[in-house]
Length: 270
Image 1 (cartoon, rainbow, N blue to C red):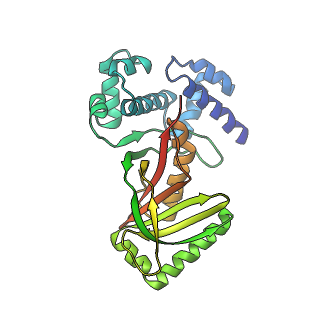
Image 2 (tube, rainbow, N blue to C red):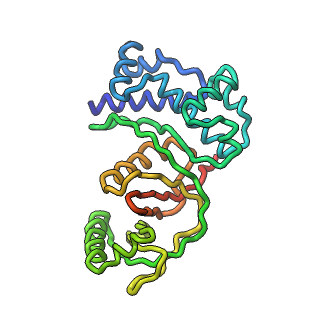
Image 3 (cartoon, rainbow, N blue to C red):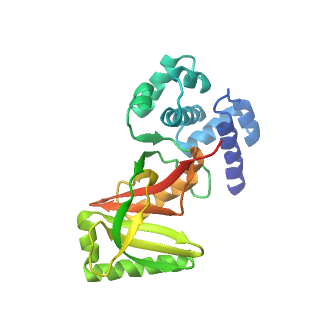
């Protein structure tokens, strides 16, 4: 299946490169070396959606992003993404996102997107992500931290750090008002900080820098869910957008039973 995953990813790449054009299904089938009918069945089996549905969602996702980041007319987006009229485009847009294109363009709304599918071993799931893009001011935090030269060593140190603050009662205090977990690096050293906005003994000041952040709602604070969301962000969401990571820093905010992942971003240069 490894080789076939590579072929399927070539099909996805062909689709992504032609979202603004009429897509030739026969060409997609030729890439896979199967009939159009067989390709459709394979795609549905792996993704639980048809190729046309996937293309529609990717086109509308790109249109959503352009409405929020560019000064574009709705009719121009409709034509660009292969809709016959602004009416049909607006209807499809509202069916997918629950808002009209004009509201998306003119009002502050949460970002929504259907990311690019990436086929790989033991994965056939494409997760939808709801998120916000916000400019945030600097956040002053008081933290305890650890560091390491390698990622494996850092993970071990982080587990030990959490064990320590639980024994000392800091973990409970941080959680009362919102606990932050911050990952950053400098030169060849990786750092991790845990803290909150209140100052406690044996904590040090850390300033989260001002900037534009993509904020993802995990829906829980279970480690497996956080890891799964992060994997989707970096392997599916980021390649699907016009953003790049802005700094070597990201952080999580833990509030009650939920976790929010903050990724600093900036627009790609055209």
